[in-house]
Length: 241
Image 1: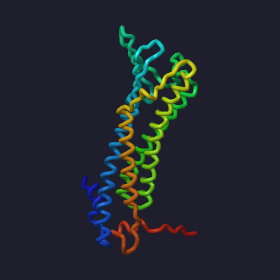
Image 2: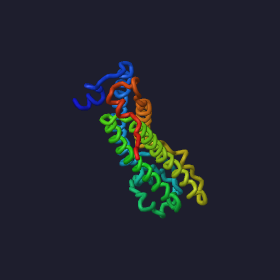
Image 3: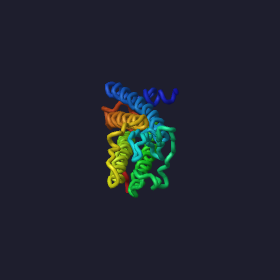
Image 4: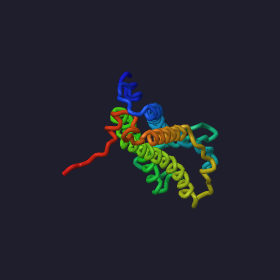
């Protein structure tokens, strides 16, 4: 904890410009808070990927039985009410959705599920690596590290957003699969679940961290630098012959 305090507060550093010093201290505090939020975002995203409530869909099948679907990344829970009993069934999406279920018979649907799983898992891995790099920037102060972290957080937000959009598109693909045999509008019975809200929370934490590191990545130059340590680390590299 003492080492973290030193790296955030820059204790023991040689101050060159008092105004810049106080400014950089507040920026680093904001970056530290944003990094903490981003670690919470990792937990939120992993929880979203592990749960099956990205969307809930209610509709009636061809036998006029109410169907309730809890849609996840790796599969879905389907609950059928036959008015005599309620049956809950797990339907996996991998290696491919079962073709005996009409709305999942579309051969293109498996690509939606694979894309969503890839985007979600890729976003989680990049978010974890970016958080480690964010912590690294508190010990190695070069401004380019912070800009790289900000760019990576933006990539993470885009990946998670892409996973959510692919989910919505996959439900639209259900309508394509059943269009020749009936008139269902699965989109009308769709509600976004708590898994999607968790993923959206991870997007929010990533965007906050992106802004914090982008604003905190000002180059420390000459007499305008906050401390001698920051000025030295932000000097240009000159590669000789």
